[in-house]
Length: 129
Image 1 (cartoon, one colour):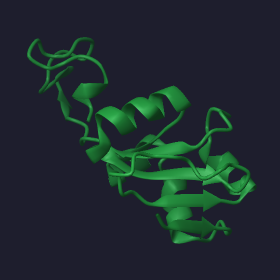
Image 2 (cartoon, one colour):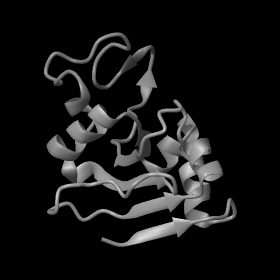
Image 3 (spheres, helix red, strand yellow):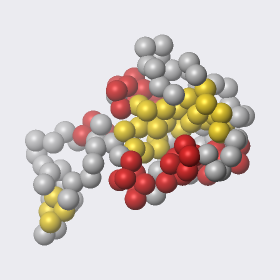
Image 4 (spheres, one colour):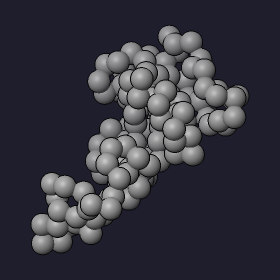
């Protein structure tokens, strides 16, 4: 496992990660940041093909992931990590690939109404991964 050290806010990878804290960046890169140890563990276990990286602070131990999962690890300086850790979890953050957003026309998306998914679409996280 290779760990990339990111120590500058001028780093290209950090700039991309920072854009993922906003909807425009998520849409542009089709990636998102996921916080919370329980949620991260579930996504690593259930949707490993959508995992694109683990982001953690220089104060964290290197996170443990399944050996079969080959994803990059990004160790950020504490002040940089705080900008990525939007919910102040002080835990590693998972970088995940997301499906593109569907267009909404006339108040309804192609998948169903804006309030409810189409009947054939699965509910919950699995619909998004």
